[in-house]
Structure formats: C-alpha cells, structure tokens
Length: 61
Image (tube, rainbow, N blue to C red; front, side):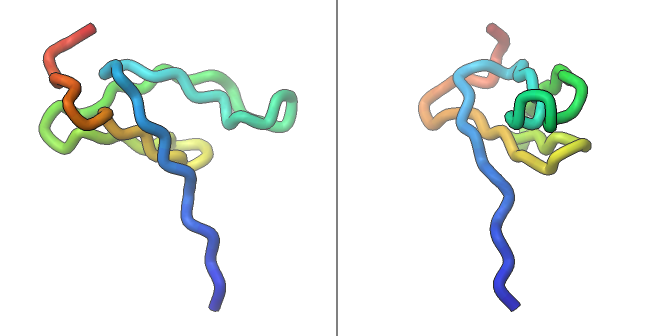
C-alpha cells in the first residue's frame, strides 16, 4: 500500500495559522498552538503537522 505522508511544516513561532493551503479548496483558517513539550501540533482539518524549528525556544513569541 502506497501512502503519502502528511505535510510537515517548520515554524519559528509557537502560534501558527492553517487554512489547508489550497486557496478556496482549503478549510477555514484556524490558529493552532505548538505544544512546548512535544514541539508540534497537528491541524484537525487537514492533518498538516507543524513543528518548532530546531534551535527555537518554546517560550513564546
């Protein structure tokens, strides 16, 4: 079975906005907060995973 992995996007911020990335074919924009402990968050609409960039501190802005 050939499966395509979900997209992983690096972020320098703990807060990210996701709209699905497909223009009008995406989903409503949602603001997500990267968990400081795990360093990632997954969009509940499109399953994109946002991870904190290496070297970034999980302390805020």
